[in-house]
Image 1: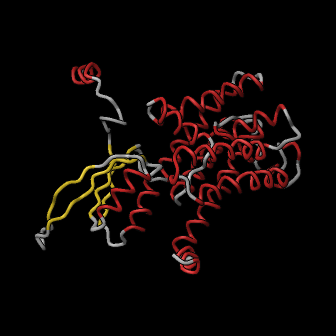
Image 2: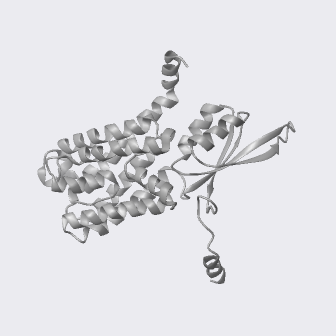
Image 3: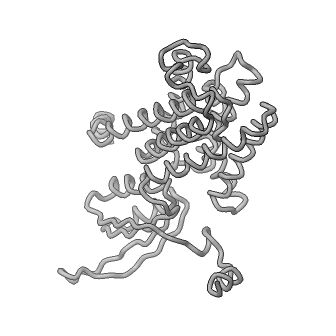
Length: 315
């Protein structure tokens, strides 16, 4: 594809709005940190949560700068390990996040007592840390979900969790919980306040629920049924780009009686936006159905637990 054609394809309304959506998600996410969690030493996980801990130790370096310092090597590692699953929008989100966060911090101030702007006094939750934890988690989750819906990821601990899931063969959500828990524990030790982890856990919980809501589905896995004439291209995408497996299901059209092959695929909610965009790029006429998966068992997913099933059935 020539450069002119690439530029024309990139400037379609769909792509332009996607980039704007990523930027909006970064702003929302940054507001959650700057207005509600950072001023009160609440650590909602993530590289920017860890950055807030390190800022307490090295106050000359802002939280956003620390987050950027972690994001860059993690992004490089992500490209080396996962390849094409990391796109330009993810790099864009990782690059602008520290500038947006540092800019907000410089304008508003690091804590409400600074009184640098009207917002610093309006959003003073010094006497109500529970509200700070809830609203901080809400904005962080909503911002992360917006970024993911636009075909990017927030990077950071998502990449670490993906690596742990890949190499240790553990569930992604379990890996994420472990990584975030370590960051919260580090914050507890550094700040020397053993009540803060409780607010941090509340913020992480609310963030996860907000993320689920924005992504429109409480279930972690999604089922995709895809009918397309571009069999080999979709097969290459699933096997080589996603590193997953799928199933061909022989079918026929009820109206035409034409023989067709339908792809059955299970993906995580964080992959769904990328998968839909890639399939659309391969075949604009593809027929795609996406449904929630309540539970998924088998290779790469949950393992059957006969004893647990027996207990549930006898309850």
